[in-house]
Amino acid sequence: MPHKLKEQRIECPNCGHNIRVSLDASEGDQDYYDECPACCREMHLNASVNSFAQWFVLWSWFADQIQC
Image (cartoon, rainbow, N blue to C red; front, side, top):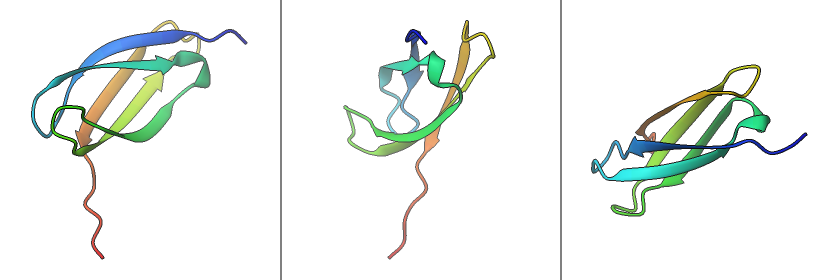
């Protein structure tokens, strides 16, 4: 299956910096953590892709804090 790279701008939920995110829409729904290049804080990203991979919705929010 060919890769269907999709790009979307999001705002870091920690500092408000605009970030360009690229996803391979052929991989279906995705849930992962990434680090903001501006504030270096972790954010949780969740992408929902439709069955034809013609569009996707990307949400971002604060990463859960891990307590030791």
